[in-house]
Image (cartoon, rainbow, N blue to C red; front, top):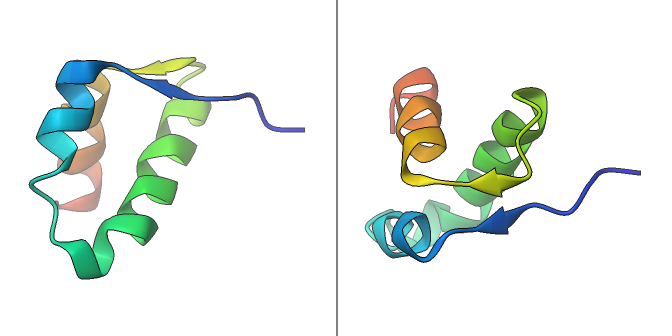
Length: 56
């Protein structure tokens, strides 16, 4: 069972810049990236690292 990932307010606000048509897929990718990093919360730093990895 995968752990629940929470989003910080700052990361969630920044994530809203992702276009609507890819947001669901991008969210899944970012959350999996966070799990791979053993993170339980997506912070702006985690989001920045995920964007760099996936070219977002």
